[in-house]
Image (cartoon, rainbow, N blue to C red; front, top):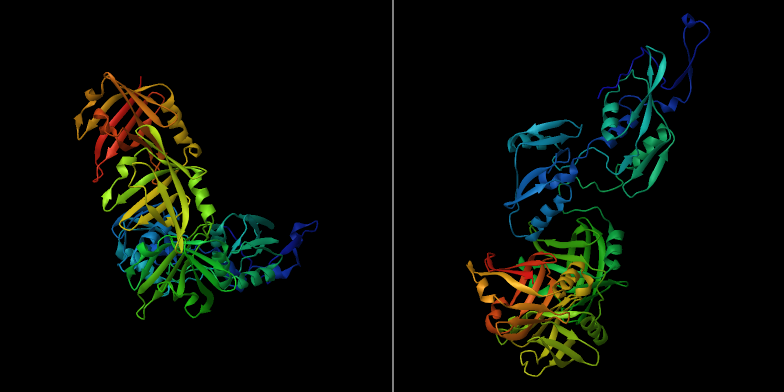
Length: 587
């Protein structure tokens, strides 16, 4: 872009009004007004404007480590050997998550060339290899910082007035973005006559908008923005812009779930995952173990030469008791770390905010959670033997008056249940006739709205909630299945077509989750249930126990396709290969 700016031999002022008498030949009278409005080349305000409009290249420092330039998206990179196509700034968080996954590995990022880089003056240059890129990276300052002002922005459009000495008129130039502004200011020289038309609105990084009514006010505003915020130009992608006040505010906002724990370079996540921390006023922090036990501790934050830190102290959770640097602070995620003297990270904790968690459990709350929906048996291991296949498609239904129901062989089996105190936590007791693998005192080790984990000596059980009426896709599946009858149109196992084994059989799915099979001079019942798995896949669980050849259909099938007349299902082997295929068609 090239703005034509005419020059006068000598004019000490910028803004002028032109008055002509009746004879043009008698000359031009220049009347001085608002001398302070002049924008002079290389003046303090011109330099501040240029720095504010300079292209900021720090947003992608996790890739190039250089704030004075950026890589034009999309770009393909290999992060620790994993290919990532970066086509938006959100993908930088994906790279950071991969880096954060392990702190004792050597993180690496390789860029697929050629690429296009954008310099601070908005020039675009094609880079063919890493050596060429390094030359531009080295041109940045050693600590990654640049001279741009990122903490305030102009609100566009705005206009300049430019005096044209050829036509004796004042032209107006409209500026629509930072690039226009940068180019315009760069082209000013000492003889140019320009004025910025006030008022001008600017917005600071905290969202506050301010108005400059003249050059001096503009200069003061831009000068105040130089150190207004942390521009994160130090190539430490782990460093977010926050202070002590914002840290305290976010910590106190909601409960925090422990996601990852490393202590002394050892992965302790299995020990502490799903612990919940509740930060309270008066320096009190409470930790809830997975079994519901509450452990009290203390916390406080402070500013140090190494940034903001949080001090945690628990008498019985030594791995949390430490002075933690706050590496990353977001609305929903906090990462804490402590380095050893050589700078390597040896301890870190990742916390995820969850405002939906009710921190403190009690018997009434646990009972209400269990009675809200159905609960399918995801895992059941008793004395080292797996039993969950017996309960495919047969969820538990906890009801009032301590009644619990289970569908076995197509029929409801009724038992009793109760939540009782158990040491520092709680336990679930169930009693069913002929169901010894359920009739244990199950100590609750993890209780969330969607999942419950229970243990008893050498036995463990995991229940997952199923609320069929709240998922539109599941509602459609259930409505489709109960309308009319169905036949096995295709069945394949290990590549062998066994469809003929199911000829002449008709399946009738009932709303009670009983499925009745009739044909070949016999009739029997099984159980069924549709639901959405944790990975988002829709499932159809079928359980015919040991009835005839239908036991081969006992499975938690993944639904590949469903419409009003056809359902296609598959089952995968442990290696991820399709092991079984089942197609049902309306009769």
